[in-house]
Length: 145
Image (cartoon, rainbow, N blue to C red):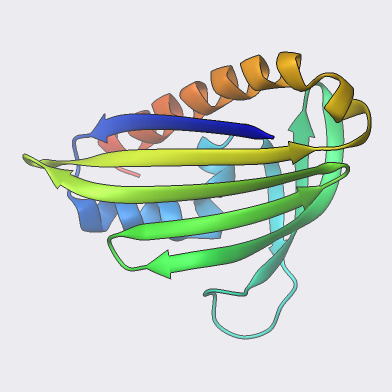
């Protein structure tokens, strides 16, 4: 099991940051593992909404499904991704710090198949990817996304 925590301070109000991050349609703008998302459940987007995903991990194209697992306005959002032999849970929490927002990201992964054999290597790659994703998120929001 992979369990990693990350954080970034974004110079934007919490409401703006939460609105951007909690919208699945923005995920490909900051998460390098997400190539595309398409909602497959009916109704408004919220907890339980499901999406077909196309992603890329370790140079491999992976199709899967993402579900929204948490949506607490301006506080927390969560996503579970099942793609190939990998299940990943992302939980993002938001807190006002000065005039900006502290985003805390917890990523938990349960690799299977070939990914289980490479769990140590994957942990390093996921850590690097998530740090890059948070840097992209900060850049996108501070430049006016």
